[in-house]
Image 1 (cartoon, rainbow, N blue to C red):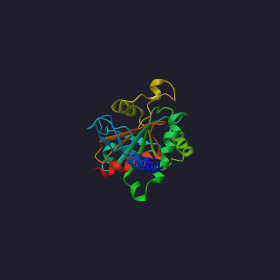
Image 2: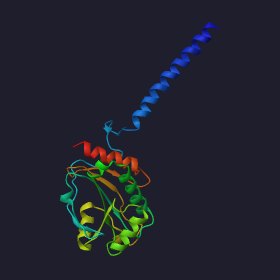
Image 3: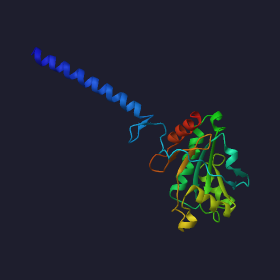
Image 4: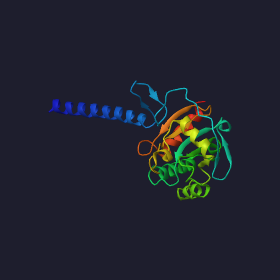
Length: 212
């Protein structure tokens, strides 16, 4: 009986130790994860090869205001590519970005700029872009760049994305959400249905700011 009791106590001790260790590992994995090489990753989105900068562009948003990439230096820039006629990933992306801005503090909003570049500027008129943002509650949170068309075509190439104009389908185009740090370096990419959530985007935006 004494032997059985001793074994029981030992079993409970080992189980408790295992549970505590597992709990610590699970807790640690909430904020960081290890890549295939074993190194700790600091971003929740996938990390691109180092040294890739935000391409230069000068485009107008749906209000007519000019947005220049060089004027965004010093801010964390969230870039994505949308089609206002898209009914698949685009509404989700715009909504998630809008909710991300809501989760930031008022001070943090001063250093985060969210920008969407049209993938079909002929259809993404000022009115269409505004209606789209309004439906996703992203007006004033996400700047939808729609003009000029020729300049946007060259921007697609510099970002190496497929546009819906080129695919011929509103729902078929590249739709990454890329995060650039304050020095204009690309540091993270999130995707709908994989890792794009307001919480993850807030985390990566804060990390991109604090790492510089």
